Amino acid sequence: MADELPDVDSHDSDIYAPPRSGEMKLVQFAAAQGVARLTLNRPPANVMSVEMMEEIVSALEALEYQRDVKLLVINASGKYFSAGFELSDHLGDRAYVMLEDFHRLFDLLRRVDKPTLAVVNGPALGAGCMLAAGCDMTLSAASAKFALPEIKGGVFNTVAAAVLPRIVGRKKAFEMILGGLSLTAEAAERAGLISRVVPDDKLEAEVAAVVQRFQDGSAPLLQCAKRAIAGGLDVLLSDALTFAEDVYLNQLMATEDVAEGLKAVLGKRKPVWKDR
Image (cartoon, rainbow, N blue to C red):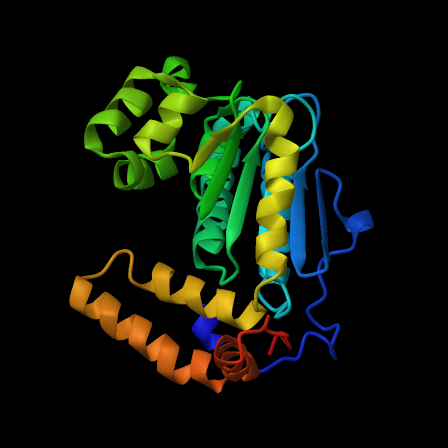
């Protein structure tokens, strides 16, 4: 997807501007200073309805064309990250739409060329667990927990069935999907489901530090590196190397920031990125 984008200067065109906050009722989405923030905002437990997923999809599609974004942060308001799918969406025709929308959401999350960071401040269950796990990086409060409880209600999570074994391995995936195993944040970190556990009272400060590191970087450099990593995840090593080299030579080397970065290293100074 990223390789097929039209040549659009996000600074000069508002054709692909993100959805306005007034158009979104179940999530909040805004971008400033190189960082886009998508907040799940459906109290009390941020249950993911079809309508909520469609708003997330809309935000991710708009983000695709914002070339100055260096990081997407996905977080949640309230005490839950997300309690998973809306129960009524499992029934009748809604089930088909629910699965299609979540598939689309997860595919966009995987293919968007901006680094993604999930910030989990509370329980991440079902679809919420997979949304957090599907981001490139995931920081979690120590008190959070992760689980796929759908099996207890007579269903299972299709994205988890396809993706979770690739993240945590076959054995742990079977325990979580078929057995409904709940993981503490520390256990989720050990399993590779999340990146890092942070004490609850230090989560906000740690997120701010991570965000600052990305704000200090070059947007095109970060996007090229993300494309190179993502493009080689599910292919043979030789193909992954070829793809990464193609991104490096034909995309990264065409940017102004690559020359600035190398000059800064040689001159022993901090680079002044132009984000193009």
